[in-house]
Length: 211
Length: 78
Image 1 (cartoon, rainbow over the protein chains, first blue to last red):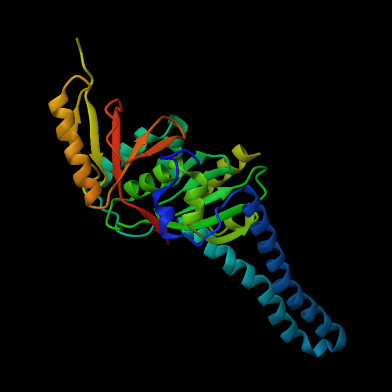
Image 2 (spheres, chains in turn cyan, brown):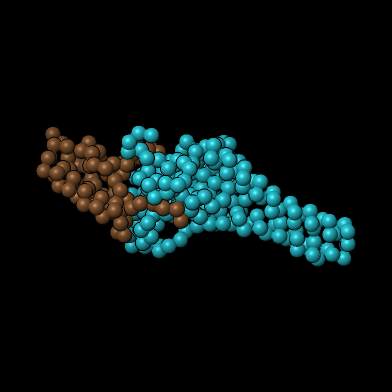
C-alpha cells in the first residue's frame, strides 16, 4: 500500500488480520454455518418431540420459537449498528449536513438525507455508512456484513459523524473494515426487516448496485 | 489574476470550522495554514484530503496544492 494510503487508526489494532474480500467470504460462511448450528437442533428437537409424544407439543413450540428468535436477535444486532444514536446536536447539524453533502454525489446526497445512510461503492462491495456503524453489501448482493465503528468524539453532530467514517473509508477501505468491529453477516432480507423503515430504501439501493 | 482560496477545516461540535485559508501564491498565508495544520495534528486530529468521488488521502503535511483539507478525529470499533 502506498504511503499515506493506510488508515492511521490501524496502529491501534495491530493484532487484527487485514480485512479483504477473502476474509469477508470466509466470515460470511462462518456466520452462515453458525446460523445453521444454532437453528437446526431446535427445529429437529421440536419435530422429534411431537413425533415421539404429541402431548409434548407445547415444549416443541418453545423449541421452534428458539429457532426463530435467536437468528432474529443476531440480525437485530446487525441492523442496530446503523440506528441513529448519540446527541442530535440540532444547532450544528445543518452546517455538518452541508459539508457531508459536498462529499457526496447528487443521488447519494438525496439518499442520505432521506435515509440517514451514505451510500459508497467500494472495492469490497457497496457500503452504507451511518452515524456509528456501516453495512457492506458484498458483490452479488447476497450478503451483508455489519460493522460497529464510530468517531472518537461522540458529541459531534450526526452528519459529521457520518463524514468522519466516510472519509476514513475513502482513505483505506480494507483498513476501515479492519478497524471496525464485525457484528454480523447474513442475508440482506434478515437485516432489512430489522432496520428502521426509513433506512430500508438505502439497503435496497445498495443491494441493487451490488448486483 | 484570480487565485482560489484553499481551506483547512476542522470537523467539530459546530459542524465545521475554517481554521485557515491560503492561496498557492501567498506564502505567508500558506505558512500560517501549515502552523495551524500542525497544531491540529498535535490535538489528535487527522488530516484528510477529499479527492472526488470515493477517494481521499491521509496527509501528514499540509499540501499546498490541495483545495480542501479536512481535519477529523480518529475512528474506532464501536
